[in-house]
Length: 591
Image (cartoon, rainbow, N blue to C red; front, side):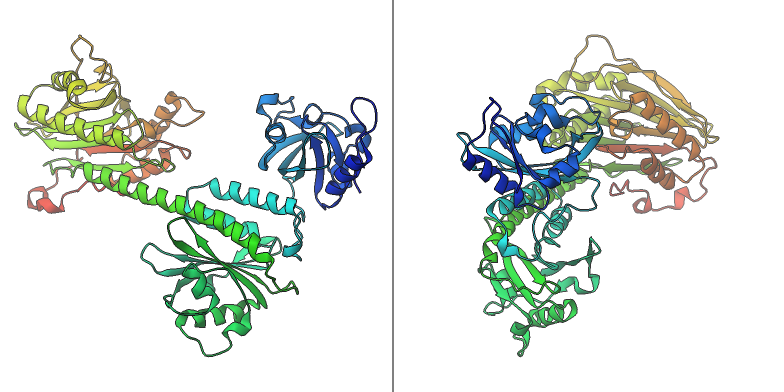
């Protein structure tokens, strides 16, 4: 039994409360304690004493927050920032990882924990907290894997809380399903099998996994495409994939003549894994059946019973909601990305120039943003170049980008003026005609000279400066011609600048997603881009662009990236006039 707390006022807690609290913590083989609604420790078990290096007498009757809770640097944790205390005060099931407790020797103990309200007969409700060291390869056996049906209600609540937290922490289908497998193996079963119904109504065996030396291992040979689901088959997996109720099964179910190809695969599964008992539940959302989860036992001798169905159905219900959200997110993201890719242009073929472009969406954003590039031929034969970023990260920003780009094309073609004047016209019209509130951009005009070089004229509306790289790897940021961003509508004329692009030089126009990263300054990003561009100066343009993106894009980037690269060949291309227009670089943005 666990240790009990004296009444913090001075007397002793009623015997029924002491016994109830001690019984709660004594039932767990992991470190556990019970606190009242004021955060005072009522009881703890021997495992908690050992992990905290603190005797019970030092903890009982004391406020847990003041005594134990610390930040990662060992400083006292403000009450408003303490997840433990928040869970106690809110009287709800909770969970967290990578929190810190102060041990008796003064060292910090990184812990993961789950909590749930508990009734111990006190005037106010209590909270059970189960915790373990993050340094352990896996949590201690809080949930006895031998007897799934013997889990206490508290342990079920803690497991379901962890399931909800884990599955709702990602919007990626693969990550959600792998988390699901890790939650149930080996806690509840020796094997976990996940069968998914794809968007095309095909069945795919996503995972066949089991625990081996504390690590979840997949049987790749048993995973992959599955035969179709028969409409009238009484077999357990077929029924689950049609959305029917959960069921118990075993290898004997598939001993007879198979009624369909999916039954053949199930027989193969039982033979390969050695499962003697299994339980199957459908994974459903509120709209449709998404798949099925199978738990199986091969090493544990006990067979599943009907009492196990309720817990498994609770788990698959949460898995269905998380999986449906992840699929919806991926579907919306693909639609948004496809829309933005179609909005981005096909690059023109310009004699004497190499030109390529890339667009990379933000890896973790739910919607696309307003980053864009453009290149088109003007009425007098010169080439217009543009790159910009409409403020925002959503479909509205992408729509605003399309409006802005089309207006820019129209003004540049009709007026044929220098870049600063064209952008002035665009700025005055943007607020009245479009839904764009603010944007940055560079607009440039590139024209050939008689000696085979190219003259670049540009204006910069609050955008990161273009980078010019010579054939010898000498770099220079074109910081001239810099003015305010679009949307400010300054009364001053926009500045302009010009430079000659010599043979072998490469001009790089880009958006800020290439140089901005959390925890780093813009200057660091610019220097990183400059150094890598210089080292790649001799690479072919396509290779130059791909490697530049690969080496400079911040690993934790949360922004889109648009990049336009133009190169004046070091030597004239004798085959330029023989190249069909449809073989010219299309500016494909999928890389």
